[in-house]
Length: 373
Ligand code: MUC
Ligand code: MG
Image (cartoon, rainbow, N blue to C red; front, side, top):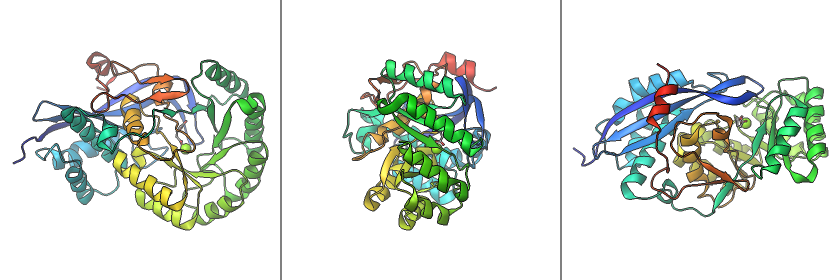
């Protein structure tokens, strides 16, 4: 019998509207669906976590519905009654009994960390060893699909001093069309902004060879996941010949993937995502592999709301190097919040709270309104 036990775990599916459709190569998001995790402990403390993916099953192996089902049926029963204060032991128990399910595990680990931080009066960043920077620079994704609208959106973000790093979502259209779109945006923004692209695996190697050359020659700073995560040999060849650095995103579905990508020399930048690794601490293991291999880091997102965004931020802020910044803008894509005080964005940066845990409180009223019945 442990002194402080995990008493119950609830996974709530929440559907939230977005400011505009968000077009990725594999899916156009018309809204975002979060899975909010409430982990209640016998000392009365509740930890919050979030497991969020993009476009049902369009992006990865887990959907909001499968995440909830697997937590309810398999993962929560393994944790209820366990020591709420030992995150290592709890996550080990999950890993021993359940393969994969990194999104679900990430939400559960975030909730354990939030609860323990609240219990000890420490921000999650301090539980993870301590922060080494004040804030995190945040990129914005231009993904309306319309060149003029994307340029206007970027200009607005620069005026507001909210973002000066822009990621363009391409890969769904003809390559020539996409390249024209990207080059027009880079020309309009010039040296005032860093412009990067995310192809979301949309090209094959034969298309990517030329396209990466054109992008590099036109001042594009970074090319994310140009080809299929399955084509490892192609990724290695592209990483050697592209004039702009290649970043691995979908290729990393676990810490072990990160190790084998590093060993093969398949990317020079890693997108770090807590959901893809199985939690903030697992993500930090991927970061350590990258650091040891000389691979640069970028703080990625699955377009989570406030909870998942701050769970990521508390871990990213402990990293020694974050050469390419972060893209923790998920809450800004949503028109509604389910927490009482949304994350603060100022002077191109996300401010990471110094209050205990993740630093968030649920707005029960709003959660009820947007929770799927
Ligand atoms: C992805 O593939 O990177 C992150 C930012 C964004 O706009 O889409 C996501 C997913
Ligand atoms: Mg990506």
